[in-house]
Every structure is written in structure tokens, then in C-alpha cells.
Figure 1 (spheres, rainbow, N blue to C red):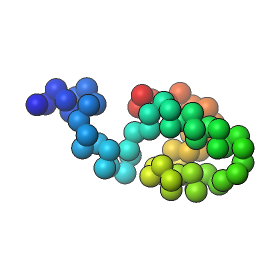
Figure 2 (figure 1 turned 90 degrees about the horizontal axis):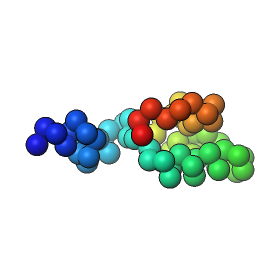
Figure 3 (figure 1 turned 45 degrees about the horizontal axis):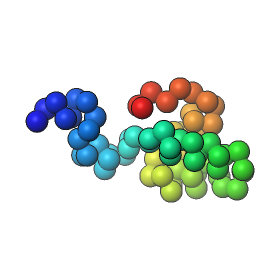
Figure 4 (figure 1 turned 90 degrees about the vertical axis):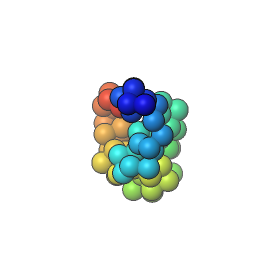
Length: 66
């Protein structure tokens, strides 16, 4: 029902371009950024998010979507 969409448990959101990253993914991204083994663009491609998303994680912004 409509409640599932509102509380974020609806799976349809996963396919959208602004796919939400979970806490574990954000931790992995931070580790990849620290290791400097990949570019932000490469990391973004792997996780299916916009490079700007990786940039904001790098800047340590509080992750709003969680």
C-alpha cells in the first residue's frame, strides 16, 4: 500500500537514478576514497550513483537518505 512508499521500504526506488545508498555502501565508498585506488567516477559507476553523490560522501556530508 501507500505506506510502503512513504516509509522507504518500497523496492521501486532502487531503480531510480538517485538510488539510495545504505550505510554499509557509504562505508565502503569512504574506504575506497581513502585508498585512492579508484576515481570518484569509477566508484560512482560501480554503485550506480551520480559522481556528485560520491563527492558529497567524500566531503563527509551527513547522508540524508539513510
